[in-house]
Structures are given as structure tokens and as C-alpha cells.
Amino acid sequence: MTDTPTKTDAKPAHRSGFGAAAREFVLIVVGALIVSSILRAFVGQMFIIPSESMENTLLVGDRVVVEKLTDVKRGDVVVFEDPGGWLGPSESGQKRGSIGRFFEIVGLLPDSSHGHLIKRLIGMPGDKVACCDSKGRLLVNGQPLDEPYLYPGDAPSQMEFQVTVPAGRIFVMGDHRSASGDSRVHLQDLDANGGNQGDAAFVPLDKVTGRAIMIVWPAGRWTKLGVPDTFKAVPAPGPAPDKPSISLTPPPK
Image 1: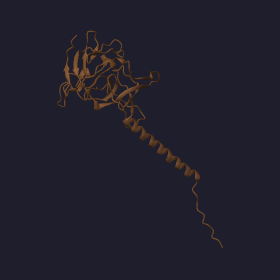
Image 2: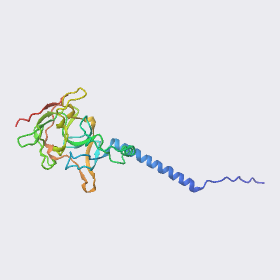
Image 3: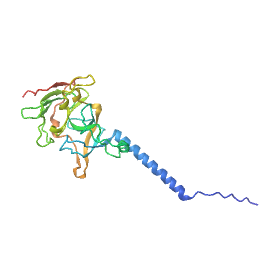
Image 4: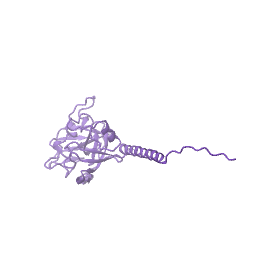
């Protein structure tokens, strides 16, 4: 006499397959979000250009890729956090809602640039930046710059100055000089935190997000952003002082 096996109800195969597929899909999505977040935090990030200060190199609404792995240098187009009091309502960028911010954080949407600025790096720590020589050119460590990226009709600077960039900071200017609230504009600012007059003109390196390397949208404006050749002739800087040196007078002609 043999025992008859007790029959058990088998789960429908299609239900089991659907559950496995759903779990796999969720894992893929979560993994992609994690990878995207890591890339955004440490490798690269996309920003939307909010203002006219970098025309015609960058236009309002352009999407640029900002690379975070390499150190910035003279001539780079750099994105940085507001060092304090630079941004007004018209230049702060439109802040997205909570859902939009989530997709920004995980890297699925370009950053709306809220609280960030983008300018060209003119002076590194220890550099002497001055305007202007007898031909109206900007000087860095005594070397005149030929600036083909300037907005048509703009002078290198309408204001005269001589500065030495302090340690740990940089001096930046927009390519559309007549429409850029850059380092020059803040050379006489008083520091609300008890610092020296003009300290706010120099952007701390730890507030630099990275260097813009490419315009990726609109498609018709796709182009690589590099360092103009004129910066290759600039001599090495001297020792960087702890405090900036600022004079609102022209350099010797």
C-alpha cells in the first residue's frame, strides 16, 4: 500500500514572474538614482544659465556641463556659490518646487542655478590683476590679455583698479562686462561679518562648484568650453597674501 502525496496549490507562474520583474525594476531605478546622485556630487553637474553676464559665450537658457574633478585655472568658466551679497532677485535663478529639487539632487534635471553664479576666472591666488594698460587691455601679472570672448562693443573694464588676489580665493569677471556684477563691482563692499573692505570681491575656492566644460543644449549651440590662448602667456603669480591688496587707480602706463 502506498501513500498518496498531498496536493498543494501552486502559485500562478505569471504572478511570481510579475513580482520578480517589479522588484528588478525598482532595484534598477534605485540603483540609477544612487549612481546619478554620486556623479552629480563628485563628477559633474548640469546648470541652466540664468543671466546675461556671460554673453555671448553663454546665453540665457543654455545648459552647461560643469566638471568637478580637476582644479580650476585662469581662463576657465567657473560656477560658484554666491560668496555673499552678489545675487539680486533678477540673477538668483528660479527655484524649483520640492519635486523639481529632488530631480535636481539626483541629477535627472539640470540645476536651476539658484544661489550660483557663472563667470570667467581671471586671477588665481597671488595674481596681480589690473585695468588697464595704454591700449585698454586687462593685465594679469603685467601680461596684457587679448580677450576675443568679450561681448561685442564691451571694453575690458570701464572702472580702473589694481588688486592682488589673496590666498584661497579667485578674481572673476563676466564676458559681458557691461552687464556683469562680478569681482570689480564688490571691491568697495563692506564685509558684514567684520572682514576687510573688498573681501567679498574675491571668491573663496571652497565655494567653487567646478568648471563649465561644454554647452549641451540647445542642440544648435553644442560646443566645448576651453581656456583661451591668451592666458597661456600669463606669468606665474607671486606669493599670495593673507589679505587682498586693492587700489581703485590705474596701473602705471
